[in-house]
Image 1 (cartoon, helix red, strand yellow):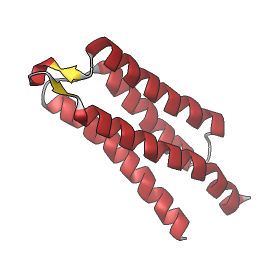
Image 2 (image 1 turned 120 degrees about the vertical axis):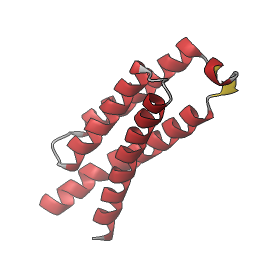
Image 3 (image 1 turned 90 degrees about the horizontal axis):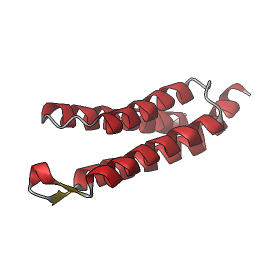
Length: 119
């Protein structure tokens, strides 16, 4: 039961981070489509995985897609934000790091937990 509660807590945190990331950028007028697509991919995979319909390859593809899209964004726009006086994109790195860590944990534990509950 504790593991299940932890899993849903991680899932909720992952989805909240994706929503927060999109909301912040939309609210300040810096909506970045490539990053929003990456957030949607990760959020949808998280929801899909919790219902046990996503296989392990789907999680790997979702996490890899999220990372690649964010890498492309940084490659195109740089590690600093000219709209903020050239400041380092700390928020991006924190949110991507947190999202990646939560996703890897969810990926590692969802299939195992699903099989245990329903196997």
